[in-house]
Amino acid sequence: MAGRILIVDDDPIQRRLLEEALRRFGYAPDSVDGGPAALAYLGEPRGSDIDLVILDLVMPELDGMAVLERLARAGFDRPVIVQTARGGIDTVVGAMRAGAFDFIVKPVNHERLQVAVQNALKVTALEGEIQRLKKTVAGTLTFRDLVTRSPAMERVIRLGEKAAVSMIPILIEGESGVGKEMIARAIQGTSDRRSRPFVTVNCGAIPDNLVESTLFGHEKGAFTGAVDKHVGKFQEAHTGTLFLDEVGELPLDIQVKLLRAIQEGEIDPVGARRPAKVDLRIISATNRNMIDLVKEGRFREDLYYRLNVFPIHVPPLRERREDIPDLTRHFIARFAAEEGKRKVTGLRADALDLLTSYHWPGNIRQLENTIFRAVVLSDGDVLTVDEFPQIAAQVGHASARRRVEDPLGQTSPSSGAPSGVPDDGMIGKAITGSPFAGGESRSLFADAALPRASTPVAAAPVPMSPMIGTAIGRNGTDPAPFGFLRSLADDGHIRSLNSLEEDMIRLAIEHYGGRMAEVARRLGIGRSTLYRKLREYGLDGGDAEDTVAAE
Image (cartoon, rainbow, N blue to C red):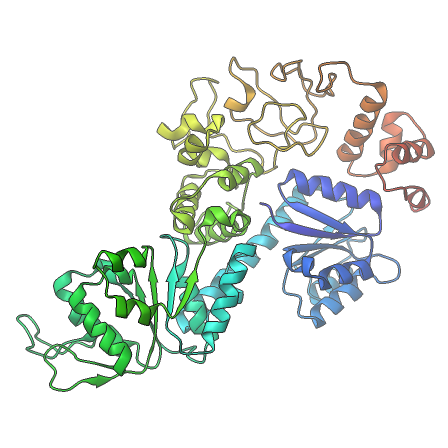
């Protein structure tokens, strides 16, 4: 997933190793060089975007335990994974008591790192979902509980917070599926009517002959079939909030009674001898152009101006694409728990790129249903492009377009291999100059063992194998045996020896988990020579000489 992770470590080599591993897993890492820098970072506005912290326990000036204690005092609510070269039980217990979610031991095992990060983010997402559900049921959901970081939603939230402190009628406008009801619930949860009834009415889903009794109620015997007294939605929402969804679909005769209810604060149940007083707030919503309905004579102008005192427009999902990663993570955690697919913990980077590039005409509701289907069909621990065939077909992604007719992952005719083969959970990085559709080149090495096929590589699913380089031909589609570095540059010419040497050093550091003595021995050079080359290639931020003595 595209979760943002802060790495706190005074060792530049370890920071770089963790950054590359986390990018390979599909996360967005950032790093700082010590405890004071971490506290400063998390205290800034950008710190609110961090989803998880990986914290080294042994650091000069301010160690990891001190950082944990200060974060706890500040009310930091995101998970912290500690790392240490000392795996003693006392160290681990102390860190967990101080608030750490999990721990990893240096040199870091990449599989262990991936599992720890996945578990931390998944548990956090589930806890957030549970809190949201509790607040929704209790009527205390607030704008802070909404899953968004989009600037386009900032205006919506500002308007909602202003409207919440008054009784002003609100009309929420926006396309179907953008989350108008959640905005209405957040307005109520922020107002002095929090914890009071929140009653929803879909005005377009009620038969015309039942609209009046549904909204205003009826007395026993008021009409044929009225064998009991019925309390309408207005009375159900007494002292709370009545949310009229798709208000533009109300029949004209009901609009007259609704106008009177708003003006007088009382309703006339069908068959009742006297009106009933109601104390409630009305929030309306529509996906229609209400002015057009007024001009066409399908909606009363006086009622429109009564409802539209404080309009709030909710932008469609295509105008706030930065919300897609967080919403996707939220839905994956929720549906994985609901459907018993607890091993589904994330999303491949190329699949996230696919979802982000789609225009989502059904907005958040469509995204929710798409993730639901993908989680149900998935056989692996991460969702891939193959779980989104309909989306891929519309976006034009080659590798999944063929699966529109084959959602269960049957044999692909072009490759002869199962098209839904799950990888090992690692996020594959695209090779520089490779034909992966939508891939992002994050490293000079490939994590993929490319299969030989008559079709382009992007058209076939690729089993991932971490830390194995691949040689490719001039056109980027002719794979060579495992273990080779890429011999040709993007322009088709042979790469320089310095470039190959830099890649070999990177590969060795990754392969031997950052154990620099072992790296130097396997490369056949001294450690001083290795650190000199690291400085030459800019692989250590210029601080490598400080690490020689430490080893």
